[in-house]
Image (cartoon, rainbow, N blue to C red):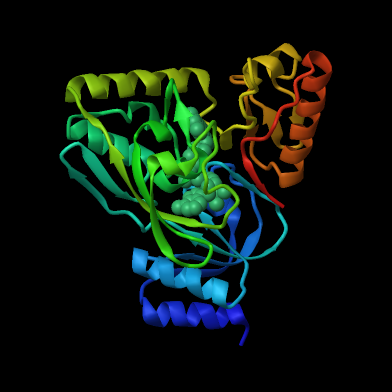
Length: 302
Ligand SMILES: Cc1cc2nc3c(=O)[nH]c(=O)nc-3n(C[C@H](O)[C@H](O)[C@H](O)COP(=O)(O)OP(=O)(O)OC[C@H]3O[C@@H](n4cnc5c(N)ncnc54)[C@H](O)[C@@H]3O)c2cc1C
């Protein structure tokens, strides 16, 4: 039996009801709707099951990655010899005073709506970010003047040796779209956020206002991974791309959004190569016109 099949069999017998899929296309699990099949995709249904799965994958030397809501990743179309562990079922959410204790798989929209109901302010900025809390921490997601780092009190994760650890927000080494977890293979399992008491109506109003701004400015009707490039120092990627005359530039099914030049969208049948090729052209043309070297924000899995 292949090591990955043996792993799947034990995962299923130890934790019955785990969703396990062989040859699962990643286009089904990413907001770009692009990506080839991985050897195995599983959504362990508790922290205990998740920890077991990560430790076993390491022990069996099977390559793996953690996937949140797939809203900042671009998988190539090839077949990937890779086990992907989805966090969607690490979905417990609890409020206690002004703190929130949440599983890594809970969507930021759900955490912030819950906070609004509890009369807690501080997460309004995150309501329209279509990621999970774990992905938000990994990326230090942010919008409209707020960032995840502003609210993270503690993060529990599984380190590269398979040991459970908890670090404070200050120890997460957060900076613009970066945290200590980047590129380490560590699995964020849960986090405690600290918010502040606020007026539920005002919190809701601010969330609706920000959602409205997104709907007006962003191409939310088409698959994408949000901003394709990081914000360069002293500027905005979208503005530089627009000024280079690239709005609407198309390669195959990939297009620099007509509505927001910072987004590359999948107009229907975009391939990985279409998106990557378009990103290269955008980088070259922006460099020629402004001297700025854009860096991808989206995580590329070749
Ligand atoms: C329409 C649209 C709008 C967006 N707007 C914004 C915005 O305003 N601000 C912003 O910052 N981003 C934005 N994004 C990008 C994206 O939503 C964020 O980066 C989000 O934080 C990614 O979370 P995710 O759960 O989808 O992560 P994924 O895309 O699943 O993963 C991203 C990276 O995090 C890692 N990861 C995910 N979960 C874990 C975990 N539990 N443990 C360890 N590693 C993990 C993955 O391995 C991967 O490397 C937008 C995207 C879209 C499609």
